[in-house]
Length: 249
Length: 247
Image (cartoon, rainbow over all chains, first blue to last red; front, top):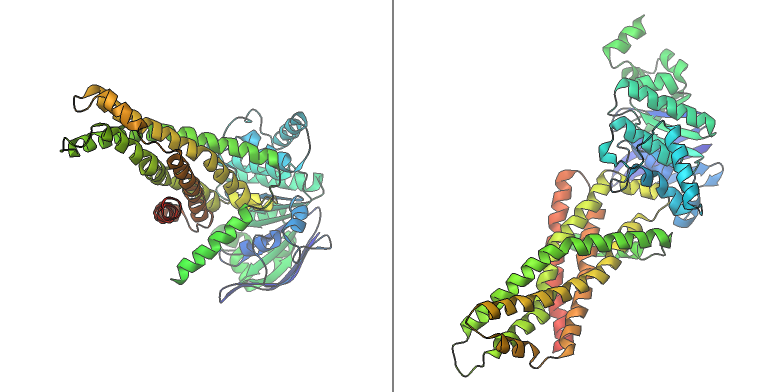
């Protein structure tokens, strides 16, 4: 479980996050949704420590992440896997080397054990015979899957996914969503997903937080989101004509 | 002016991060070897061509500049050797490397920054500054002095080719000249300069790449900036070290 309490974050004079408090639950897909520029990416970067918060607390299973130094944070960061919007695979390394990287950096496994783990992770995301390809040789969907394989290599307790479906066709998007759901349940992870994609929201949203103007505007699940009368959330959810028609049914 | 001080301060803060204890020596060693190959072998072709031609041109220019019969022809070999050892090989080659290697480093690290590869390293708990920059600095401290010695050798060979294939001076004069009044300290001085230059060539472009913000356009700009700043720094350091070591 990850708890964030009263987080504030400013860049210069511009306050991006205002007193945000959210609890992200284990074994659930916790979605953060919101329009572009609403502050959801900044919020996620604060949670993983890429940005320092101005005030407030972030706790990973009761461990206060906010006041830890770099080395103390390292122990928690080894428990975090992250899938980036653009996959962020190391483009000078092959698929196999990308997945190997965290294992080589942090474990004392033998080369054979590492290779077994790499193959297990790649098989788990249904990637076969791509070990020696480079990221540039893969499709967007395959890159995302390699990103997931790398994120799960160290058996993380916490998985962060930044717009996992962006740039993918709807079918591949669903494959990625399902994969995230499966590994969340299989490995008992606390998963946080930032998304714009309403398909993902309706498919995977166990717990949804809507961020608007840097504030937590609404919280609920995928059933509740359809019944909400929160105007800003309705504007976001029913932005497309299809969703508007769906609402009027 | 404030920006300059901000950048200088930030540069030293980055170096503080770079020289922290590595997380995994084996992984760092692998990176160092990779960088040595990339920095060293990748630059040999260019350095070879430039050195041979510059050696030949310096020799031709010196020969053509000697009008007086009172100046012995072996002075040509001596002038070529001294030009190459003291200035052309360490300073000019390092300026060329600042352009080639520096822009490469800046754009490589800059691309990693904007494609979130650096964030990915940070989230894994890796000290990204150290993992990306430290191996480059160490590799350059080993390989660039070797490249400079290689350049000295090829420059003198370039002059030899002029001696061998023109009737302006004899090979004997040239060979006598390159051995005349040789001081080992000149090579040591050149290598000391090279070590400083090697540090500049890798650390300044790394700084510009590491803190790039934006997109492809900004990567291009940071690449250009890194070449300009490292070239200027090389010239300033060259002056200071010459004043300290030779005068």
